[in-house]
Amino acid sequence: MTDASLSRIELRFVDAAGHRRVLSLAAPFGASESNGVAVSARLEQALGGTIVRTTIVNRGADAVRLTCAIFEVATGFAAAAPARFFKHGYQSWSASGGFDIDASRVHRRDSAHFITRVNHQSEAARPAEFPEAQTSELFTIVESSEAAERVLAGFVGAATSLSTLTVSSPEKIIARAILDEVVLAAGAHREIDPLFIVAADGSAARMAARWADAAGRWMNARVGAPFQRGWCSWYHYFHAITEEALRANLKSLEAMRTEFPIDVVQLDDGFQSALGDWDTTNAKFPGGLRKIAGEIRAAGFKAGIWVAPFLAARDSRLMSEHPDWFIMHEESGGPVRAGHNPNWTTSDDKYSYALDPSNRAFGAHLRHLFAKLTRDFGFSYLKLDFLYAAAAPGRRHDPGVTRGESLRLGLEAIRAGAGDDAFILGCGCPLGQAIGIVDGMRIGPDVSPFWGSTASGAGDPSTVYALDAIIARSFMHRRLWLNDPDCLMLRARETRLTADERAALAATIVASGGMLLISDDMSLLDAEATKLFRAVVQIAAEIDANAVREPVLALDLMTAGDVRGVIIENGAGGAIAMLLNRGDSAVRVQTSELKLGAGEIVAIDLAYDEKIEIFDEIELPAHSARILRVYLSPRERST
Image (tube, rainbow, N blue to C red; front, side, top):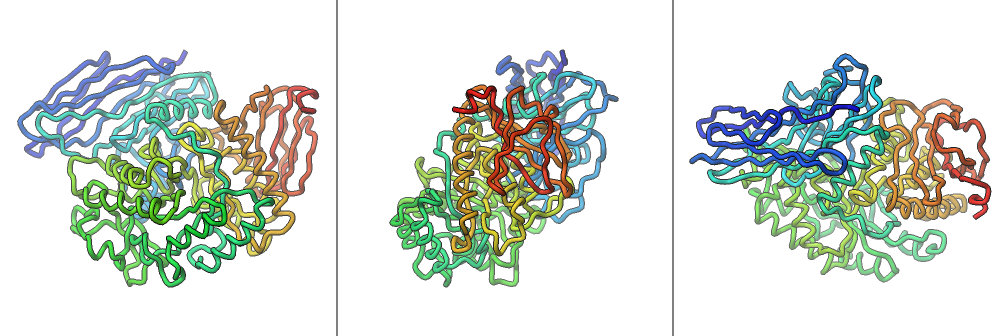
């Protein structure tokens, strides 16, 4: 039995005189005090593991600033043993996967542009003792080749801070609650989000699902929304979407409702008068948002809209009228840059700037804006994008709020304005802070109308890179929210995706159990696209229904190979799986290696609408996927 346990707690803070202090607690814990600051910890046995609850109290006469709380977890693994860890990404688009421990202390983002690091890391610059290459966000799993069990450590709460877990050596995990030098007033106290530690002999994917279930329960995750089917303007029109194009697709969707049974029509980026001014439109949308939403609803669909609520550009009314609503750079004193996109602004300055939800006036603006979008205009589906901006580093209006709390305050204000009935989809969002507020969450980067590089961790926008993320985070579906694997592109024209690649995208999306949105000019879709969509709608709804009981699990969460997949039990003793060949060459996979059970296997080739009975091996062409149905017996198969 692996002896995983908490061995040490450390609080780092800055006292009233500006001196950096360290306060330590060692097992069996309890309480400790220094310089008027006290830390207490209690360990609770729950969920088959240990939950660590920590409280900080300022008993002194002066305010202090809290830097971080550190938890050292002993895994019980040998320091010299070959081992891997799961490196979980920061936000929706950030990569997740298994890596060798101590393979490198250098990461490609170490020298990247500031905005890239703000996008994909909870800290724009990692402290030297917590290198990015060895640091995971929110939770991690460590597995050693010399032990039967794996160890998971992760924060099951995320309301009060961002958090990381660093694995520099197999024998320990350093979990850290990032407190951003937040002010703790004299007499005040602060609870640290609870840390969960568990050792088990299950697969890494099942352990990840166990963490997600615990986090979802702790933070009252919203997992009850119905299965989502819809259309989105982005992946055909991008910023060039017009009111006329939207209306043409709406008419097609209304006429093709039998072939394409969808519920939501969502207008994406490209309608707004300026980045930050979300209730007014540009010249491409002369009718305005109220009219657009009304037409969508009149056609029998829910009206959806895209908003980036924590960003604004210099040519916006919001930035001109409210310069005090922004996160400010500590040194220059100007607003913090959090994005760069020439399509977002007509000004020479192509940057977008991070807004500060700790400012109560901005919070009131968010509540009013989203009440207007939902209750006045009629949009009931809200896609919130680039949400990481609210957690950008810098000086905030309220020094008593961490970056994690600032993000959550903004999301809470949006939910309060939109109301409980609106479906809120998070995107570009640090994941933990959104649990219990959003109904859906993007779990990977943007798909693209091309396949892209198969180099592991390449990070360039591409369909294959998105597929990696969909598989890695499949365990979150119906535990933290409804997973959004991003849009399915069905068209055979005006795309660089082959038939196999389009079917691989479809197979991965539906096998994840998550939301199913298409994103094509509907006039480009032919009979083959219609057949593909109707097939995947049925499978996706079935898997989503099963996911209420059983998580969708990666076949191997720690893999770095080109053959990847997911599996979910179907409730009848069988299973549904998806096998993906993301590589550039055909492969043959032995069924015995997949551990799918002893039943009969039938492979569904979505690209060519074929069913193939599988015996000892499965052949997968390059850039292709198969849906696999595993039957316990011929009788089950016949039913």
